[in-house]
Image (tube, rainbow, N blue to C red; front, side):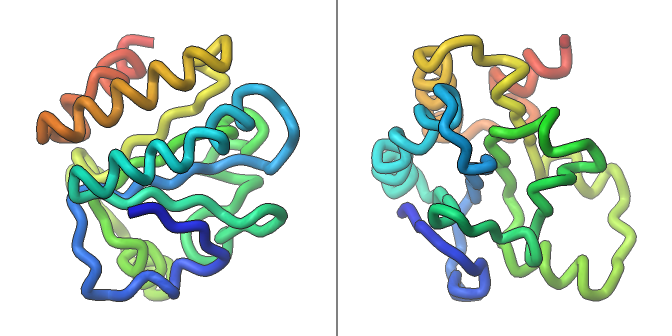
Length: 158
């Protein structure tokens, strides 16, 4: 299932998936981000076959108030991270609830809950993005945990 959304509140609470995949970018016209956007339909199809959901903001809109701020992601400046793919096992409502209640989430609680993939760091060409997408969905299809995704191991090395 793929969603083009302006508000994560639109995703029903009872929508249970193994993985929630966010496509994060500034909306700027640059090759890596453009390739990510162009492959949304492909990712949505693959997600629907693998109990996952792919979410992408509408052109010119961000869901920053509910999950992430495009200018700051995981405590790092957005221009150093974006475009990126965020894969998580947590329903979007859990993010919003955690922010609203200021819950302190223990590091071990997130061990296999979130994987942030900064595309600038690992993709040099648009074809690299396509290859990465294929690898991500191969790992999802193989029912791997986030820690066992091939890209997670590569990011850990680097």
